[in-house]
Amino acid sequence: MKKISILIVLLCLFHKTNAQFGFQIEGSNQNREQISFQLINNLVIIPIEINGDKLSFILDTGVNKTIIFNLSKNDSIGLLNTKKVSLRGLGKGKAVDAILSRNNTFKIKSVVSKNETVYVILKDYFDLSSKMGITIHGIIGYNLFKDFILKINYKTKKIDFYNPKTYKYPKCRKCETIPFQFYRRKPFVIAKVQLDTVGDTETEVKMLIDSGGSDAIWLFENSKENIKTPKRFFNDILGEGLSGPIFGNRSRIPKFKIGKFEIENPTVSFLDSASTHNARKFKQRNGSIGGNILKRFKVWVDYPNKKITLKKNGSFKSEFNYDMSGLDVAYNGKQIVKEIVTQSYSNSYDQEMDGKSSISFVTNYSFNFKSSFIIRKVVKNSAAYKAGLLNDDIILKINGVPAYEFTLSDIINRFQERDKKRIRMTILRNGIKMKFEFRLEKKI
Image (cartoon, rainbow, N blue to C red; front, side, top):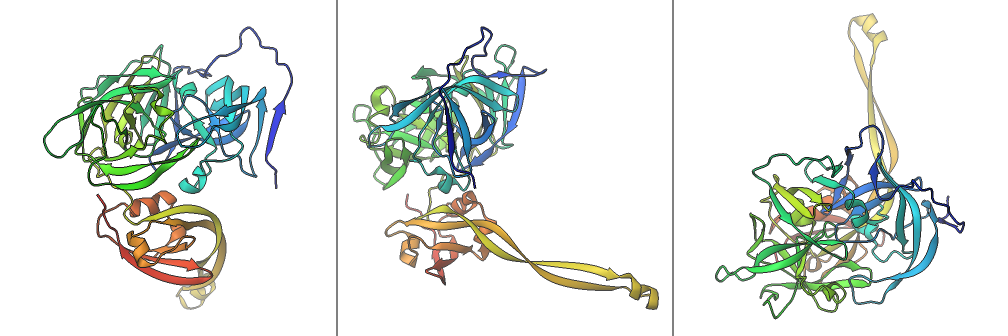
């Protein structure tokens, strides 16, 4: 087994006068490259090679630094030109220690940069891998977006990188192009929200485009603009930031408008002031637009020309829902699963003797490593809590289907499907199999 290896190269590097700066498309076709991505919990996951080592990153318009925060026992990566620094993000805690490394080579198929800066946080504060069911090594944003026009197709899970000097937008009457402004190399757009079910008053808001947020909308409470949590809400941990947990109230608003598109009854999280102190340094900011909105469009992200173009897709009118089970489920590594393998064969000798063929069946067993899932937390007074499920229960079956046949996203989606849906679960607790049943409960 390999140990984690971070190779610190302390040599003075001599730069050639023709050194590449930023990302470029290499090869014969320098105008376009297409890659596939995974969409997990509304987040775009892309493969990146760093100095020849393959890692997985969240593509995040909400960050201005490239950050690695998870190196497992099987990961080995060489980092160049390093020094210690501190980083601060959302959350109530203090800044965290990191290593800054310069002049690294990043590669995504033919999209290459040979002088990238990366920050490495040696302690994984996010624990995203267990929350998403696959290994996530880091996040990348501005450094990749700034050199291209990116077309993100959430339905086909494809991203096209276009050379901004040669790309021509297709004629599209159903598209809407919205200008944005940068603050600290992050894109902000103007949108509108209807906060009250009484009347039709709309409030103009300045929102961060945040593809690295899985929620639909985050809003910052603001008395001046009368942005406040509706009467119906529940308090929750909304996520993890560099500086600790992010707390707030989950609710729903009647309408959200971006450009000509109106989105009805989206879920919204209202963040507390302590968790967002650092984000509120941009005083005009009112919140964020996350992946649960963006995935409803085909999206052109154009940093060079400071604009974003949207075209709604088949998911545009899909219902917005929160978890209705009260279960926080996480990936729990691999388990050995015994599976039946049945093989059949015909006996040609018998056919020659009596003109009939016989078929024999041989049953064997195979042992395979499959995903395992664990209940990390049961929300008090939730449907699952009332049914008797507990923290650390290992999920074996959901509605009769073995848990290993699901991805973590599949399980999360099942707990968001519809109010009153019946859920039957078989779990393992202290070596004993137990069965539970409950119905999903819509809170807001």
